Amino acid sequence: VAILRSQIHFYDIENCRLREELNRSLRLITQLPSDYLHEVSDRLGCGSAIILRGCFFLFDERAEDWSIIKRLLDLAAQDSSGRGFVFDGIASVIDSIDYTLPGTEECIGIDSNELQLSQCGVEVIASLLLRYRDGSYEGDLSFRVPAMSYITKVYSYSQHFGTSNEVSSELPAKNETALQEYEFHTMVTAIYKDACLSPEDSIAKRGFESLQGIVLSTKVESIPVGKWLDFLDMVASNSPSISVQAARISSLGLIGRLFLTLMPELSNEKDNWSQLEDFTIS
Image 1 (cartoon, rainbow, N blue to C red):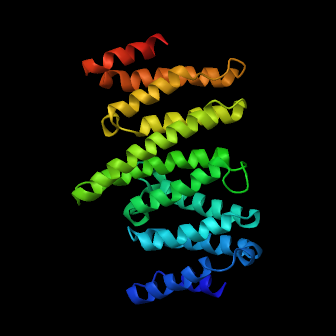
Image 2 (cartoon, rainbow, N blue to C red; image 1 turned 30 degrees about the horizontal axis):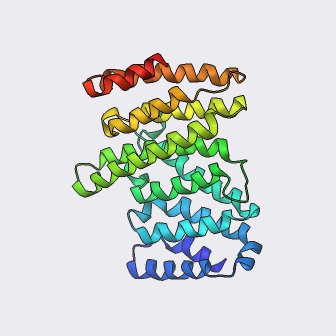
Image 3 (cartoon, one colour; image 1 turned 45 degrees about the vertical axis):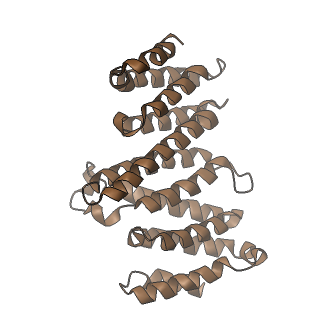
């Protein structure tokens, strides 16, 4: 508890030596016996969530900072008593970024650059959310639906911040492109198979809403044509069960959106015509 409190109170002090010592102390927690961590997972989850919420914008691209906080959050989420604290901390970070993004009325007078999530941060948070979505923590699926919603937002942040930083450096821009391709494939496949095809109406509906959010926030040219065609094939060849009426309606809505969004761009290349024709017929 003392180590976590020290991190919370001192990390914002701009002193590299101090931050290195704080990180070294946090690393000691990750080396404690699992039986002991099980008993204090609620405190670990609460403290780690506070650190994440209060310091994430100070981590920047420091892989070591993100690696340590990811390990702490993952350890705390292993037990039910700490799992809720960790998810709330992640959700709080995402909501705070959502609040300051340009284009919202709330962000007037707020410098959104102060609350950006680095690409390393996107990877860490997306990775943890995917574990919540998959029930990786003791098979707990109670966080699946909200996790999918937040995964969609995290993906949109990677594109938003990637675009805003593109001019400053060529190398990160290339990394961001690769990250977006990986995220796109992972997220659309997981959301479609795990949520959109769910026999429960509410889960399927939320799944299609999340999927449309990803499609709308993704520039067609930012993803290889092959990835888009794979996505179209998955949607066309795996329709929701006819017994899940709400899912069928949402599926038709998604297909209509795909026609409006993707067809004009993908049909420019003659090589794509055959696959697009198959998608249209199916």
